[in-house]
Amino acid sequence: MKLEAVKKLLEGVPKVSLGFFPTPLYRLEKLSKELGVNLYIKRDDFSGKNLFGGNKTRKLEFLIGKALQDGCDYVFTYGATQSNHAMQTIWTAVSHGLKPVVYLAAVVEPDEEDMRSNLLLDHIYGAEVHVVSMQEGESFFQAEERSFQMGAEHVARLEREGHKCYNIPVGGADATGSAGYISGMAEICGQAQEMGLTFDYLYHASGSGGTMAGLVAGKKLLGLDLEIHSITVADVDADYVSTKTQLANEVLAYIGADPLVTEADFMVDEGFYLPGYEQPSAGGTEAIQLMARREGLLLDPVYTGKGFAGLLSDVRTGKIKPGSNVLFLHTGGATALFAEKEILGQLF
Image (cartoon, rainbow, N blue to C red):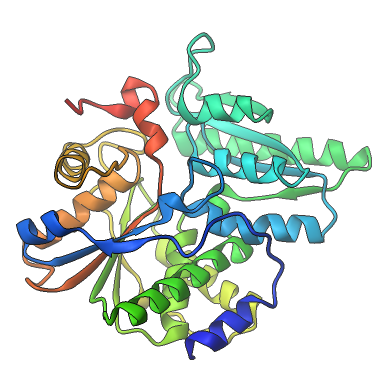
């Protein structure tokens, strides 16, 4: 499908304006020379009207648009205590007159006397914040499941009182939210055309998988010859690709397009998330330092550091051919550099 036709489909679903688009896309001159590839960066950390943008802002344009269309007065969402998604959901909700409620599982237990990073911002914005502490022997994902149940009970109470609530999943990873990255892929396609470029590879960090599903759906819809490499930042389950395939086709249906995506369209690399979610890695630390000291740009230890570590590894091992045009999608998250030391790691 041609670019203008894709844009027309996206105009047919609810949306609000939250960001300044298109976000910058440009060549990283020093790292391109050092790595022997033509390395470009897409600055979706610059996406929001808020100072702290990121990939969730694209999704939230569609999610908040749907919440308003549905006549909701509350927005609920979930994540870890330092969740970028939760923070961005909160600012986008309050800026549109919606009351945000978040249930956040504590990978690292926050200090109430020393509130930091996204969790500090959540409180400044006036959100109703519920921290769900991990119980002995419980994994993060089990604590997260408890937070979903707590949120569902809260929604039910409010709706019995006559309120209408919009429930956003972790990462905004549903058909409505993932439309944001069909839009994002269309934007990348347009910028590449203007620059006379054809990208061979696109690398990004992947958590809940909504960005990945939208990117792959957008690639298929636009008929692009591009390898999308999704570097996971957490231990994903065995049906990760199959469920994201379903999500990609659901988002295509949501905007009025035919299902196009198969499991073969996903290239997921699980080799860089260890020792775990919100736990720093040696590769991620090196990636953060390299980007900062060569290009003056900040990555984060939870998402983009590990995503860029995957790209660096593929360049160094020859999986990315010398001279290739490579795009790194910067999905934001630099607020994690001001989080608890257990998340930050040893960066200097």
